[in-house]
Length: 395
Image (cartoon, rainbow, N blue to C red; front, side, top):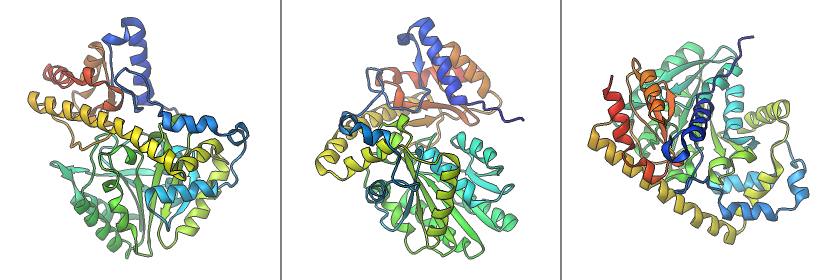
């Protein structure tokens, strides 16, 4: 009783789709769904990925995975791709599955998880499902990650419950598109290693968008800070091929576990996997392994993907330039699928309604409208900042 899901993303997506049917898609600005679309308004399905999938024998696609933990070839390919050779990997249904089992196995019911105050909404759904409470650290101070707020809230939580699970969505944070600097990561990891002297600490690093950043090598640099960590510190890097391979519907991801006690946490996650989803999509795991272990296929994938990384950068550069020109306040943005506009909480719902009336569809977050640059063509991004600013000015 009382468990009713009100998903703001899919509600907004349906509203945008209804408007397209009524008014025509050319008149509608649909910046809702977090899937990648090209400049012609067609969802991107990378040929370098799906050609490989089509060559996988049907039996391979139909069969169960070889292990509840996930195929060994897939697990090794994930470690190699991310540059985390000493990790334990548990295959999951998308990044969502990885986040969910990390929540489940890090805390007891009634404990609090620590999230940024600008966050991906399904974190809250997962917390409710696991009977967890939620607290927040302030994510930004000016145009940078608020390391001090992060430290203060972690210390408060450690004092309150003797253990800490804290989430950082980086790089290309959903919903702002912020990427932390190496200096910010160094401060965070130095602090967490010290904090772990007081009790158990789990860092959840949600990297769903890691392969659509501007510099893929730079995106993995902070992983070197995950070596030689405190015995009481574990890290769950939650990975998804949904974004990496434009394979949203295959539902394949991984919890990549780092730390001295990774084996026992891996065992707990495998136990949870058996009790909830049992087996991850075999065809999707084979697909990832095939691409990552064949240099010709991998090179083709990287070359094709980079075209869309540049496309995203062009869109975000244009939106941010025009936002600056018209005085539209946004949260700090570096790269990725999304940008979020700052709107006072007292008017944000009214702004959302007016945007919809003007056939502009975004996601109405507690912090303001999330604009999905990933699904909005450059032509439609143009003047979008000005239109949003005009509507905000009405209030």
